Length: 330
Length: 170
Image 1 (cartoon, one colour):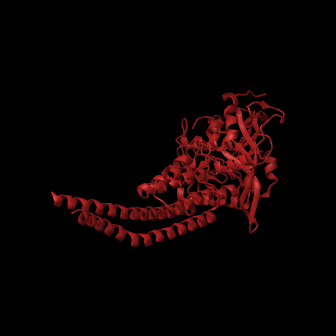
Image 2 (cartoon, rainbow over the protein chains, first blue to last red):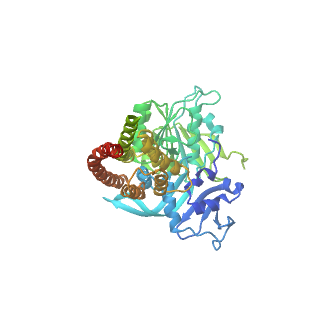
Image 3 (cartoon, helix red, strand yellow):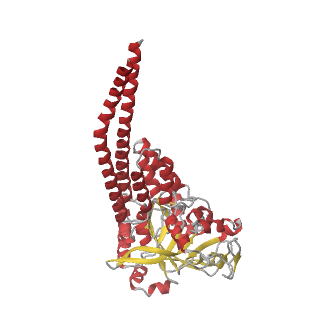
């Protein structure tokens, strides 16, 4: 598990024609690709450094789609078998939720014809849209802020990460879990349990985390959050429970249960800032009841993962941003 | 001198007869092992939901050696990640593996089985397995019936042929 993986590790999951084109790209480009899009009868597109490029048969990138390779229906059928490793039955649940996690923690989003049974999605068939995503693993993303997340005695604070989408929330959460689990200077490492409902935090493949989540970390993969939190406490005796995107009523109830058991919790929520959060009754209760001892607010002001501020339980500022690693405060 | 010749003739024709009979036994054994290996694979797929590459490998390890080789090969081809689908990997393995163990029909049954392998949900996979196993079982019955008739026949025929040669040439 190195710092950041390129697309090479999942080339095998592309249909042969697309694989050939992608392998003809330069190393430099391959490293930068964030997303590859396959859409039946439409041009092959990649995303890198935030912009979209079309790819020609000879492997040239361009802004216009006129000379680009057109993905065939056959490609899409092949892709489906390769992505599901010819084992559709093993990935029924994953396909139902719209994506498959590959070896190495890569994720492939699927769009196609949804087959319904009793009103809920049974399977997606004739998949004609693929989004191959390279998971962003930034080791050390949390290193600089860890000192704000534990007290002098080495106790972990209950933490809520507040962030709009696409601001590096999950990346930060993963690295905090890793840091708490591995331990760092003056901090011994805790038993961590991650409830990973959408396989985003640990990127599990066959139940084994593909991203670095630390040596003392157990992962309940694809497990509903509320159930998972209670299950974890019952069975794995964690000292810290980590989960993503709370918001539903049962999540909050489970969260109270965790806190009552004396276990620390680290979680995230979709919101712009603390005021935005207070508009939601369920979450407002949590803030006013001082359930959380630290709040981290993220934005993408200087790119994903910009740290806006860190607040304590009384909403007093303990760290003022905006700050992004490698960038000076303006 | 004569006596040795007599013994040798009868011995060799009898062995040929036994060898012919053995062929039926071997075919029966292969079919039986195939059916039980498929049953194992079915469980891996419908119950444990093990991805195909690993499921095939597991079955290969716990099956009869000859039959295991088929599953082992299929697993390897699938694992090469050269873009083969499960059906293609299975067919390739089948062609490499088959060395006169099976009749044409039995081979066709296995080929048809491969085309559906891995491309549907667990319920439909189970149907494919059941159908294939039923067809193979029917073949096994045929082979057993044939065997009952022919095994004894070949064994006796070998001995009698030897005896006939001896009497003719004595």
